[in-house]
Structure formats: C-alpha cells, structure tokens
Length: 362
Ligand SMILES: NC(=O)c1ccc[n+]([C@@H]2O[C@H](COP(=O)([O-])OP(=O)(O)OC[C@H]3O[C@@H](n4cnc5c(N)ncnc54)[C@H](O)[C@@H]3O)[C@@H](O)[C@H]2O)c1
Ligand SMILES: [Zn+2]
Image 1 (cartoon, rainbow, N blue to C red):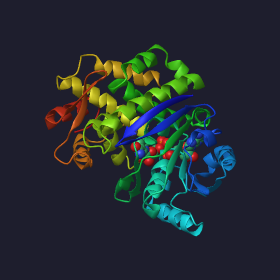
Image 2: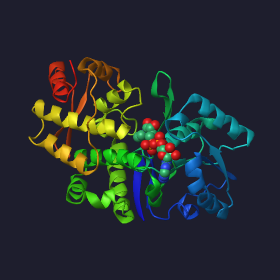
Image 3: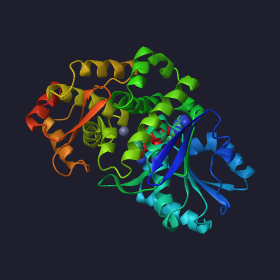
Image 4: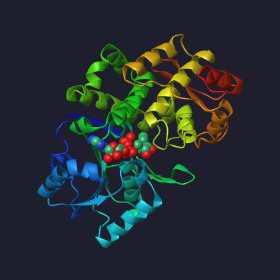
C-alpha cells in the first residue's frame, strides 16, 4: 500500500493506493464523528462489484452506507442527474456532516464531487476511483463538474476530497478501451513530468499491459505524485497546472469535432501528444526525435493515434473555443521529455502545417 499527500491551501489529504484498500475503508478514511450515514454515488456495474465490501467497512464504524445509483459514464454528468441526487439526499435526511462518496470512474467522481461541493454548501467528500483514468487523474485535484448541452464541464466547483482510496484490484475488470484511455494520461505524466516513469514504460510496457497489480500500484502512485505536485503549485488551475493539459488542446478539439462519438478521450489525447511533439520540433523548441519517441511509447501501450483528421480550419477554430485560452491559442510544448514549456506565440501557419502533415485536409 502506498500513500501520496496532496497539499492544497493550508490543508492536505492522502491518496492511498493498493490492493485491499477498499475493504479497509473503515481504517483508512478520516473519522466523521458527527455523521450517521455515508452516501455512495455509483453506477449499477460498479455498485454490484464494489458497494458490498465498502458498505461493510463503513458499517464497522457505525456509518450506514446508502447507495445512490446514477447512469454509467458521461451520461451521469447532467443537471438532471445532479438535481435528482440533491432530492434523494434531502428526502433521506442527509446531514452536512455525512460524507458523500464517489465510487466509480471520473464521470461518477465529477458528478458526486459537484453534489458534495454544493449540497448544504458543502459536505465531506471521499473519492473511490475504479478506472485508471480516475485513479491517475480525475480523483485528484478537486475539480468537479457536470456538462451542459452547450459543452463539457461548464458547471462545477473546486471541492477537494478528504481522502482518495485507489483500489488497484478494481482495474482488473476494466474494458480494454478504458484501460488504454488511462494509459494515455499515464503517458502524459511520463513525457512531461516523470522521466523515470518514461524509462520504465519504455523498458517494459508488457508488465503494465498485463495489469500486474504490483506494477499498477507503483504506476498509479507515480502518476498521483506527478499530479499532486502540479496541483500543489496551482490549486485553482491558472498557470503551472496547464502542464497537465499536455496533448489536450488538439485532444479536446478532436473530441468536440467528433461530437464525442468517435475517439475516446485517451485516443484523442494520444493524437494530441503526437501533435504537441511535432509542433515542438517544428517550432524549434523541441529536441529532434521527440515525435518518434512519442509514437514509439504510445504504440507500445496499445495507443495508435490514428483516425481521420477534421479540416485544419475547423481544428484551429476549435482551439479558439477552448475555455482555457481566452487570449489566443496557448500550447504546452516540450523542450525535451520532462521539460514542458508554455508557448503563446506559435504562428497559425505553423500550426496549420503540422496539422496538414498529420493528415488534416485544408
Ligand atoms: N475532475 C478532473 O480533474 C478530471 C480529470 C480527467 C477526467 N475527468 C472526467 O472523467 C470522465 C471520464 O472518466 P473515466 O474515463 O473514468 O470513465 P467514465 O467514468 O465516464 O466511465 C467509466 C465506465 O467504466 C465502467 N467502470 C468503472 N469502473 C469499472 C471497473 N473497475 N470495471 C469495469 N467497468 C468499470 C463504468 O460503469 C462506466 O461505464 C470524463 O467526464 C472527464 O471529463 C475529470
Ligand atoms: Zn485527459
């Protein structure tokens, strides 16, 4: 079992990573002395596999666990589901000292976190992430949100959890595509922040792909530490945390133009990381060979950043809409692996050229 401390504005919390942490939730979560119930937001699949042991653990400390079922995946992140959860909490007499738990992937976490941020002006929140994406990324950092028809994550709040329990054995049942999506975020940390992790992945990707629990425990812990470092420096996501957006400028644009139907988030940011590497080289900030190395890494992790590219002009337009970049387009580039640099002055023609090289029609 590994622990990583996340430090945010005068407070800190632990991310506990390992096999068997979920069953030991009673020992690992902080005491909630005034609580009588624990509300567990989860979908049907995850509930059936993991709610019973979690509820048993809470029972041992006198907390009655109540499951609140929500749709699986992105469909949970709507104002309708959010409102339904608020009503259920109110009718079940949830008190502001009762913790709300997210048991599931990043969608469940984003939704439950937003409920916890707002119900009675904020209740304690516990993350129990069960996908690789949620364990290495979504459960850490306190960003919560639901979507609007107009766009993703448009309504939300910052609300840090009291603790994150990352149960490694949950990853065994994850569908391949979801597992690979998480690996794309892992590759992001390896390329931008943790070059030792990069070396490990390059040496032996097969142990990761085989989902060896010991290897995954170490992998998740390293990624959590990488994200925790960025979050500590920039809790409110104004500067340094942009590094976590590596590969996401093109990634988000592809997702938007695919109308969220084509590439998975992981596939989209895999293409985005290839684009960022190419642009780094083209713009003269990146070491030669960065693109080749990125492609080798992604391919060894089962991520083939292929698929049709939308027209370059549509992509450029989508970059402008990205909510992070109010004044022009800003890219996270790499001088070399582990050396990210934020660049504001990439001429549109240079961007166009790289997009064309990647197959985007004029
Ligand atoms: N808040 C943040 O900082 C942050 C960061 C990254 C991503 N996100 C958000 O996370 C969401 C994506 O999350 P995700 O990739 O975890 O997927 P998800 O939560 O959308 O979907 C997960 C799917 O996998 C299933 N599942 C979950 N755990 C499982 C398990 N152990 N075994 C088998 N099936 C399981 C679920 O039933 C569901 O169908 C997006 O909405 C994204 O915006 C948020
Ligand atoms: Zn991402």
